[in-house]
Image (tube, rainbow, N blue to C red; front, side, top):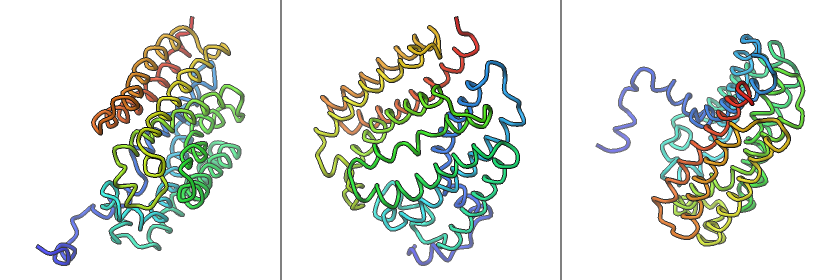
Length: 300
C-alpha cells in the first residue's frame, strides 16, 4: 500500500481528537501538573480547598498543553527528520498550522480564564510567563542556538511547583523556589540521557544538542556532574527545615540510585544504560516529590 493510498483511507472516528490530544504531550504534561499539585499541598499546613486545587490543576494543564502544541507547530520540520517525533500530526502535515494555532489559542485562553477568575491573577501571569518561556524563548531562540539550551531554558520547565504554590497561597516564597531549583538541576541529566541514546536523531534534526556538538564522553561527564549537584540540591528542603527525616531518608535512597545510573552513563555507556537512566529520572522526580508530600503531613 502506498503512502498516498494510506492517507486516502477514511479516518477512524476519534483519530482527529487523538491527534489534538497528542499535541499537548500528555505524559510530559502529567508530570508537570503532578509537580504543580504537590506545590499546592505543600503551600499550606492544612488541606487546600479542593475547588481551588481542581481549578488550578485544570488551568495549568490547559496552558501547559497549549505551550506544547506551539512547540509541535514550531518544530514540525525538525520533528519530521527525527524517528522519535516523525509521526506527530504536525510533522506529517495532518494538522495544519491554522488548526494548531487555533487549538493552542483556545485551550491556552481557556486556561488563562480559569486561572484568572477561579484561582488568582498571580498564578495566571506566572503560568503565562512560563508558556512564553517554553514556547518562544526556549523553542525559538535557545534550542537552535546553543547546546546549553536545556540548561538555560530549563527554568520554564521547572516552574510547575511555584505555579501550584501561588494558586493556593497567592504568593511564591523561598520554599517554592527550592522546588523549582530541584527540577531545574534535574533537567540536564534527565534530558541528556535521552539525547545520548537519540544522538543520531538529533544529528539529523540539525539541533546543537550536547552529544552531537561535544561528544558522548563530555555529555556523560556532565550527566554525572549535574547528578552530584542534584543530590546536593535535594538536601536543601531538609536543611531549611521545610521537610523532615522522612523526606531526607527518601531523598538519600533515591539519589544513590540516580547517581549509580549517572555513573554508568558516564563510565560504562551503552544505549540501554542511557535508556534506563532516563526512565529512572522520571520515576525519581515523581517519588521525590511524593516523599515531600508524605513528609509534609507526617513530619517528625
